[in-house]
Amino acid sequence: MASVFFAVFFCVIMQSFNDGTWERMIDNTLRTQTGHIQIHAKDYWDDKIIDNFMFMDPATISEMESIRYVENVSPRLETFAMASFGTVSKGVAIIGVSPEKEAQKSNLPSRIVKGEYLTETDDGILVGEGLSKYLKVNIGDTLALIGQGYHGSSAAQLFTVRGVVKLMTQEMDNAMVYITLPSAQQFIDMPDGYSGILISLTDNNKLDEVITTVNSLVNSPITPENDISENSALHATPDTLNANNYEVYSWHFTMERLLETAKSDKAFSVLIMLILYVIVGFGILGTVIMMTNERKREFCVMISLGMSRLKLGAVVAIELLMMSLIGVLLAFAVTLPITHRFAAHPIPMKGTMADTFVQYGMEPVLPMSVQPSIFFDQMTTIFVIALLTVIYPVYKILKLKITNK
Image (cartoon, rainbow, N blue to C red; front, side, top):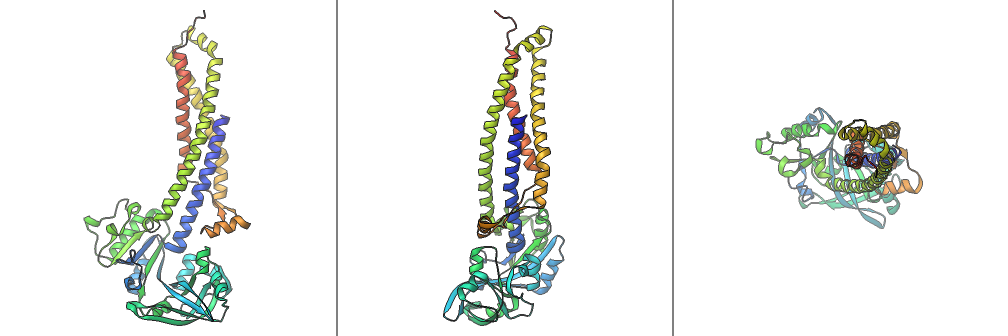
């Protein structure tokens, strides 16, 4: 029971931390950066140039906001330009957003470290903290952006620095600026143009339903050839989700690399747990062998009194299974409060460890997951181990010689 208890305890804690960290990272990324669903013009995903940007009327965008389970609809215009101040210049990523919607989506105002946030009609700019240090710009300075506009036109404009923001990753912090959506559209000479529209949901389990609704809204009615009504989110690709003018992507497609990384990391964790359970399995088997040999006289007496070998083997098997189950239940009794506690209140990281988390684009906390599969997996594994170890005492009972020579 002690072997089972400690094996289940450590495996639950390790898997809960691992799954909780990835769940938090993916959820933060979906809600603050990529969205659960993305809408782009055809060919944009393969060739992210301004000429592949999309147009969409405000009425359609407003209608998407009223779809059930949709939390936020954030039209964006993302492009690149050369930012210059004085004699210093650097290539930057320009993110044109609606300040009000971006505040709801990514809580960007909370990241302001200097200055103030943008308003909807603002013609100013927010600069990443690392970029501001490189360009040596301060609040009130004028930053020049030079790039390419729509259909090959030149784009050049001056923006007043309104604020400095501390972004999640070092790469973003060193090379990203925010301006309002109208300013970005004016900069590239593309009124009512967007690079894409990001949609965040209140419930990821409703992803298929919302994708179907969005696709039918922005494209032609769905036909049997491109029906996406059943388990499509896990395999969402442009080929299955496109129609007349737009491509609707599930986050399983747009974040495919991150999901592959998560799968690799979880596979490594499974390997570690497998090694632990092999060690525990041999420990349990050694204990069972010792118990079986010590109880040979007891088994002989029971068989001599008329108890069948099959019944005796069944009793011993049930006994071992019950001890394993008690060990599992004791481990669950200890780990359930722990996992629920740190799922609701993640462990905050500080110092160098926190900086490392931020550099990798992760929130500097250690959350735990309380997915039922974490606990069921451990119970199933222990049950299999117990069944394998039961083979030895049952076999010994069936072959036991009652008479001593």
